[in-house]
Structures are given as C-alpha cells and as structure tokens.
Length: 402
Image (cartoon, one colour):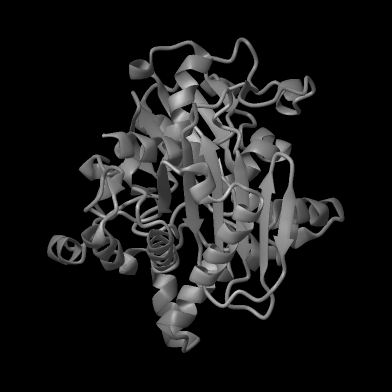
C-alpha cells in the first residue's frame, strides 16, 4: 500500500520538490527529491534524486512551466513520474495566507485568485508560489492540489502580539498586522517536543528557533503560538542571511532624504543586501565560520549581532510565557551550528538553562531529535530537525481524503 504525495515549493528562480510515501515505514524519508534552479538565467539546472538514481539536466530553463514539465519528464524516464506513481495529492507551500487562510485549503480558481491578492504582503514569495500552483495544476489537472500556509500557525496570535501600535483605521484598511512565517516548521517541531521531554502537550511552554538563511522565533503555549518574530512580512525579527531583521523604521526616511534612495532600492537593500551578507559579505554560516576562524573582525561582529538578537527574543519570550519548559533549535543553522547553540544559551544557568557540551557537539553521533541540555537543566534544550515537506504532505493527504 502506498500513498504518494508530491510537495512543491516554488521560489522566484527555483522549484524544490519531494515525493513522499505516507504509508512507508519511514514516511519522513523522501521517495524522490528534485530541484529546478536558475530559471530564466543563461544556465539552468534540474536534478532528480531517487534511492537508486540521480539524473541531471543542464540546459537553460525559460520559465517555471518549462522547468516543471521537464522535471516531470525526467521523472518519467526513471519510471517515477506523477502518473507512474499515481500521485494522491499535491501540497504547495505558500508563505502568506493573510487574514483569509488559517488552515490548509483545496486550491480552486477562487483560492488561486485570493493567493494572488496577497502578493503585496509577500512580494518576494507569493508570486512564485502562485506560478508554481498554476503550472502544477495545468500539468496534473485531475489531482487535488492543496495550499499549506506558513502564516496559518500564527493566525490566532493574541491581539497584543499581532496588532501594531499604528493608526487603527489605516492598519485595518490595509490589513497591516503581524502574520509571521515559518509556521509550518514551528508547528511541526513544537508538536514533537512534548513526547521527547515527557510532558502533556497541553501543559508545555516552549520557544522554537528556526535558524536558517531565513530565521524566526516563536513562543508557544500548549500547542498554540502566542508570539513570533516575523511581522507583516518575513523581513522582521532575527538577523538573517540577507535580511535586516528588526530595524528602526526611521532608517527608511533617513535613506530617502539623505541618500536619495527610492523605495524599491531600500526594499532591495533590506531584503537582499543586508543581514549577515551586508555585514561581512557572506550569508552562508559555513563561510562565516571560516572568516571568523581567519580572524576577520567584520565576520565576528556579524556573528555577535546575530547571537545578540536571538538572545533578545529568547529573553522576551521567557517573560511572555512566564514558565518555560523547552527551547528548540531547528533548520539549517539551528540543527548544524554548534557555536550558535552554545553562545545563544550561554550564561543562562540562573534561568534553569544549562547546555551539555558533549551533547551539543553530538559526540554520541545521535541522528534526529536530541536533547543538548544537562539532565538537571530545568529548561530542556533540544535540536529537532524540521520537516516542512512531511507536514505539508500530511496536510494535503488529509484534505484530499476528506
């Protein structure tokens, strides 16, 4: 018995996808994964990986539709195309669901139109997601397509956390509030924590730290998010690979008046030319670590700013929650960078947070989720690998069967 679900994550110049078999012994291990990248550039690259084969295509890719159609053709050559596998449903990651979507939804023409209406709230993400949805629906018209929204987990934030101190009429007219992002990851990871620490999920207060090129923090009480670091868009909050995170809004006015920069130029500056890359020239943590090892002061300062911001959010969420049971690191940086975990949790013994160096370094070679705090640490600190694709696949299967 199989239940193959295709999960698509369309970016501005790439498409990442996986096929998962939810009836397999290890449904978290992809049956197939693929990447279509450099769409619209002079060079293109498609890579399909199965358990037994890897095939690649290095020709220019004119559009998302061309890339997806070519990828499906390559899959068919291996006998694992969507028709060969009898794909049960297609799950689409969508960053911004706004105030419209608070749970996954079957995609029809009206839903696609509504996702398009939310582009102003996620101009870097929703256009690409919509493009992927339209192309996938055209190629697989007889399969249910399901949108799973990054913002849905934060839809029920209390007003004190979701509303800005902006003129109420203006905020309501233009749908300005804290929407958050990475919600699929925060929900998935936080859902695993209670079992790991042996507590009733309804009683667990926790902080989850999704640290990757994009980064966000969330405060979660009894399985429900009560606060998160990203805001109207994924620009706010923690320092990221190329994004500023929190910044005084007056910087915008200052750059317009003094540097004569346009709004589009500032948008690009904040989203693509800032963060770690803007501070030291690289946004890959491995390269950042190399520069730090070489004694580059800009790299060290960038790292220190990154750590400082994470600690600020951890501290504020501890106060909001009142009582804290667990702090969890996830995503590329959170799962793999020993120093970030060590330094963001340093000198917090008075708050019941004590890191075990051997566990943090994973000297035992543990795979998957693990504790990195000491046995007597009142607050448990964990590393839990995220799996947004599995969460999306499960949501898509549930709706397709309903």
